Image (cartoon, rainbow, N blue to C red; front, top):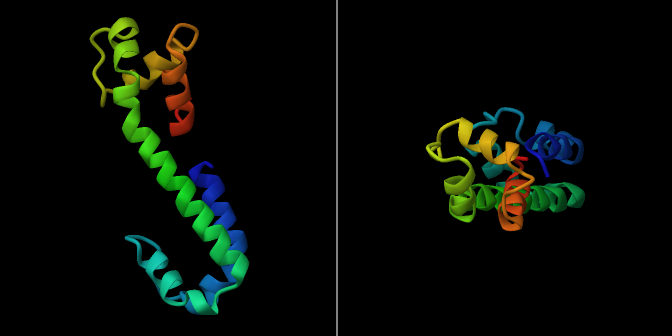
Length: 115
């Protein structure tokens, strides 16, 4: 699930509950999450289910993003010599090399949402 899909799902499922219970809460810094969790018993069950699904999906995406440097290390060394992780060209190089990078690296890039 992409970040924009996650935001759209939360807006659709939880929009009325956010307006009702968390209207004065700043959306950043986890304050909206805290408000929703604090009022969870009052929320629409679909909102609760979708919020959990979004949280789980985004946690998996973050873990996949953190794993890319290790999973793609050998591929980067072979096909992107001299391009260090953290350099914006790292992902460009790996994505440009999709025909030759390992299956595990391709999957890691896909799981991270970076392909």
